[in-house]
Structures are given as structure tokens and as C-alpha cells.
Length: 83
Image 1 (cartoon, helix red, strand yellow):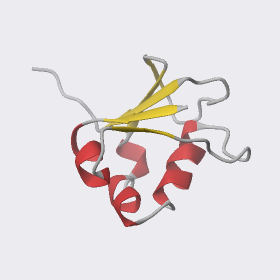
Image 2 (cartoon, one colour; image 1 turned 180 degrees about the vertical axis):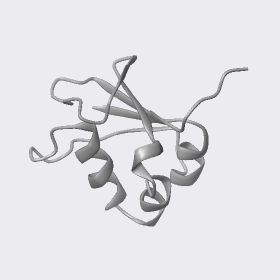
Image 3 (tube, rainbow, N blue to C red; image 1 turned 60 degrees about the vertical axis):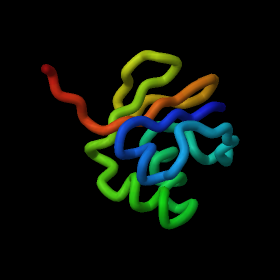
Image 4 (spheres, one colour; image 1 turned 90 degrees about the vertical axis):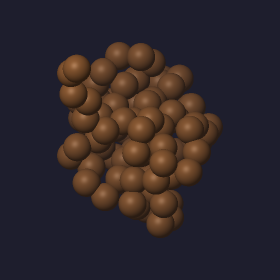
């Protein structure tokens, strides 16, 4: 699946996107965030406060308990404010 990173999540990881294949044990957005955070220092920094991270699966905003099975693209971004 393709992962896309936005705003300070992208800045901390150091790339805008990547293609990954998480292990079968990773079934939800929350588990994916935890798995990514364990991949190294930059990921740990980007996901150090997982509860504030927002996610979208195939362009639809989802909660962190959403299943990732069958997802083609998952985007991660910090909270947004109106303007």
C-alpha cells in the first residue's frame, strides 16, 4: 500500500510518500502507526503523539480503529484547523 505524509508528519519522516507492506498482524490504522513508529528515529518522532495523528484511507477520513485491509493508500496528517 502507498503511505502519504503531510505537513509536519512529512517533515519529520523526511519524505512525502512511500510504498510499504506491513506485517499481517497490523490490521488497523492504530496498529500501523505503532508499527511505523518502531521503524526508526524519524518515524518515532513523527508518531510520538499518535492520538493527534489523523488518517485517511483511500481519501476518506477514518478513525484509528479503522481496518486497513484492502487499502490502496493511507494518508497521515496532523490536526487541521479552519481558516
